[in-house]
Amino acid sequence: MALLVPLLEACTVSPKGSTQYAGPDWTSYAGDDSKSRYSTLSQINRQNVKQLKLAWTYRSGDISEKPVSTLECNPLAVGGVLYATTPTLHLVALDAVSGKELWRFNPLPAALLKELREKEKINIQPGFNYWVNRGVTYWAKGKDKRIYYSAGIYLFCVDAQTGQLVTRFGNQGRIDLRQGLDRDITGMHYNSTTPGVIYQNHLIMGSTVGEGPDAAAPGFVRAFDIHTGKLNWVFRTIPRAGEFGAETWENNSWKTAGGVNAWGGMSLDQKRGMVFLATGSPAWDFYGADRPGQNLFGNCVIALNAATGARIWHYQVIHHDIWDKDLPCPPNLVTVTHNGHQIDAVAQVAKTGYVYVFNRDTGEPLFPIEEKPVPASDVPGEKAWPTQPIPTKPAPFARQGLTEKDITNLNPEARQYALEVFRKSTSGGQFTPISPQGTLIMPGLLGGANWSGASFDPETSLLYINANELPSLITLAPNERGKPYPYRHMGYNRFWDPAGYPAVTPPWGTLTAINLNTGDFAWQVPLGEFDELTKKGIPPTGAPNLGGTLVTKGGLVFIASTKDEKFRAFDKTTGKVLWEVTLPAGGYASPSTYAVNGKQYVVIAAGGGGKMATKPGDYYLAFALP
Image (cartoon, rainbow, N blue to C red; front, side, top):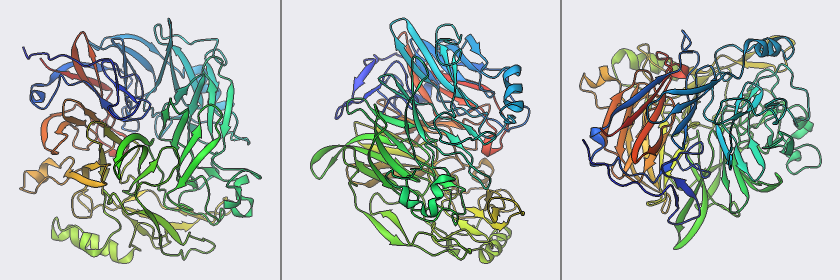
């Protein structure tokens, strides 16, 4: 039996700030309100992590036969109970020691699905977005314990102890998330894939909306009363006439514009009463002639008054986005030492491969951000913004743009194919506009960073980011008559060689540690591998990845996420792999850690499928010391 070292206190305060970091319980999506993905637990550590064994496996039994859905849930652990979602969005409570199912709630029974299809004109099928859930929100006061989570257009309130709807909330336990949007969005894509945050009696929610080229809903941020479900406040991410930023939508395009949604979640400073969010691009993604202007609050880091929804500050990191370069994840609330002073800050990682660091109170960048000229568009009517904000520090954690030097040399056939595609496409920096001849974007549409965001270690001020270096090839084509836009795109195409490998030189996936005190890299290593290439003597290339990190006081960074279906633990100081295991399906999710009866567990969802198109799964797996 391995020695079980003492655990830390349940709710440990940041050594620098006021954040309450996760201990034996993992009570919030990404661990805490600051979205640090950090745990004070240290029973599992550098010295013993190689002894980790599978403690239990749970299978939900509702797996799709085709890999069109996946598990991306970051499960919560509270008082010995694990709360998680399944591939078809059932909510389950599990015994955190054994993995035994305690109860299950089905949010979309057959009758409700029929109503959605017939009345709401929503054809919900297993697949993109409607069957994705990245976590739930836990709330408790005395004996009243609740789980709030979304499925389709609904937000549900479920009794955490019984799995039954809390019928005094909303309409018999649910509310329609389409409230307060200023327009009828019947038939448009709308749901929420990421859980909200709670401040006082406000449950603050973002949304996932359509990206075009069809009409899209606006991504307004709303706060709902946690007791009644009543709409408390709305922040219009697309301002209307008379509101700040409306003039950045020329020709009154704010009236019909969609998108600009905080789909990746939010972070919360309870002490300041501030909620922080990051928004996506306006719709549609690759064409903006119908929405000339800077397009606030698209692609912004925004600080709001959590009680009222009033804007405190914002910073737009991309003007008039025509590349689908959403800010895909919640900002990390961090405390750093900058120019000799301790500063509460906000760190935002992006699909672009940049990290933006701001003063939490004022929005002032801690490292200078410079407006740099970028290419104009040759698409008729498109007015690409002439400059884009580029951070001077930290350096990009993913390569910027493509040149012929980046083309794969894996073998002569792959290189020849890739060169032919490269030479007939438009390429250059990542802000080269999309064109009818096809434009290569690097980083591609999966980032850089994606929805999993980053983890932050408050002891060292290191930020850990998993990223892709996978170019995308996007092409505009004339649209059919009668459509709202003159152009459509020819798919979200990846630039891969005929054998199915990225058509650029490695690394294809990375894990990076950045010191936020200085803005310097601590280390960067490939994340993942293709076993067949490694066996040929090719050094680990890194692999496509979706899913997040977990950093612990035990000196470890845990991450699955890679297409090779492995779950790994890295030394958080050096980036060395200390432990790995092959999962029964890809772990395209973020791990959680918790402790029960003095024993620490690390749990990961393994759903496979999704954008990685690997074999599907319906697993939760927990690991512990023997």
